[in-house]
Image (cartoon, rainbow, N blue to C red; front, side, top):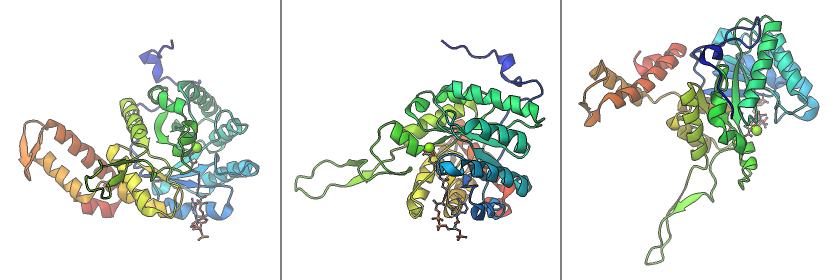
Length: 352
Ligand SMILES: CC(C)(COP(=O)(O)OP(=O)(O)OC[C@H]1O[C@@H](n2cnc3c(N)ncnc32)[C@H](O)[C@@H]1OP(=O)(O)O)[C@@H](O)C(=O)NCCC(=O)NCCSC(=O)C[C@](C)(O)C(=O)O
Ligand SMILES: [Mg+2]
């Protein structure tokens, strides 16, 4: 039976000279995490322009990078940190390292932290299975931060992509104050669970509910259901309990923008802060979906204005409002304010 760390030790740096962990997550709008393959110079070179549109730019070193390009990708990630001032456009700079049991993980983390640690906001860790994976990466990063005299802690973001990881998601979220959030990794997770799909996220035409037979034998209506509902719900509850953020992850059918939008919308409504964009076309979708709709923000503002101290009961446009709807309104208005602070057009649309 494992024991939790005593409360007074939880926020202590794990190495002498490492920066103290954040007590609260930095407030950043992270509607999409845009994946860049850093070994392809032509694509890497566009990172500065893409950073003007995306909230987060991520250098991907793991899956989708060919084995013989792993070192070139790592070098490309370091070049991105040197060549682009992502912080100047308010864009986060993240890297997805190779997984813990791979031959590249140690060099990925060592080089990123010691050579780009002051530029790097978040390290994304794939295939996390339990809190032990976070404890190891946490300690290693602290040692490297101390060695390289990094001033600001680098956060950790885990991908939920094995059945064991899903079983342990609460402990993963609570494993360290370095935790930033969790993303759903639907492709590896599908394989790990023996789901019979060949897709990266999204629905499936076989996964649906069909209405009862009609007496006249006419065609029965059926509707596809969301294959990811259970996992997203479990992930959101675990993340919110820990005070960290949940993300959908990738949508692999690049040409199907409608299905991408729908999957992102489901994730947004269920509590996710953002999703991944694998292709430039997906950036705008995520930006629109993970920014609350203007009419929702205006209605939420009406609730807050009508109930300044958040108590009592009111009727607005025929709908009952009380302490709980006040809190829902506050979630939407707080997010809209964060987006407005970053985006002047959205600020005027939201009426701030
Ligand atoms: C899908 C691909 C191959 C289609 O790439 P393409 O070249 O065939 O597409 P295109 O439509 O022809 O591209 C149009 C233009 O956009 C550029 N472009 C295209 N993509 C990007 C990009 N990301 N960033 C910046 N620019 C990009 C591309 O270079 C081209 O520029 P050009 O007009 O000047 O020639 C390509 O978009 C790509 O490599 N995307 C990233 C893929 C990736 O990172 N996959 C791994 C994440 S998903 C995952 O790991 C799963 C998970 C979580 O682990 C799990 O569920 O288990
Ligand atoms: Mg994966």
